[in-house]
Image (cartoon, rainbow, N blue to C red; front, side, top):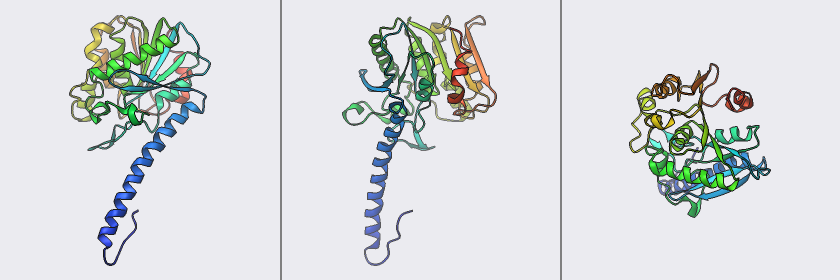
Length: 284
């Protein structure tokens, strides 16, 4: 609550205090959110990388013991804090709860790394290209997908990998799918509460269409032969099973694609806690 200012000149002083408090809160909130989200990885000993991916600098976190692997699993973050409320875009999309990062930390393979979305975790000069459209209507724009693909290639080369497994959470599922559609080295696609058909999603949620964004469902021809597992929360009110089913409807009946609905899960619970067990259901 703002302090009450009375007496002569009170309105002017109140305006000054309001401006100062809002500036401090916004700046402090951004710094604190970036630090808190990154701490999830750094407390586990993971190393941060800032990858120059052309249009954007993308933040990544990698485990300390990983040197080389034939197959690398890349976890791609969700949309993060894209909106403050229904009408106000966020100033910075760094997630409050980096769920894909937490999934990566729980991956038992020892060959998992994490990739943030454009403008998440980065500050200063590394925020070049960061326009709000890239975490609102154009969150899956071609330049976003291209930057993600470039960053993934750098991670692949760093660890000498020959093959990739892409795991995407929420909006990160769309990016993972669109990247997979462009590559021939992805051996499996796994998504969690994924936005696999944003046209179905915006229609169901009565949201504005994501104009300028690529739609994973439109890439089904390139993904027909790729083994895919899509986890959906039965209680998810943000991205429900209808989105995954609309996406699956674009594939041939014999495509190697499965949808696994977890009846008691929602968009956030209980993926992290159950992740090692869920991965056992994903065919090698």
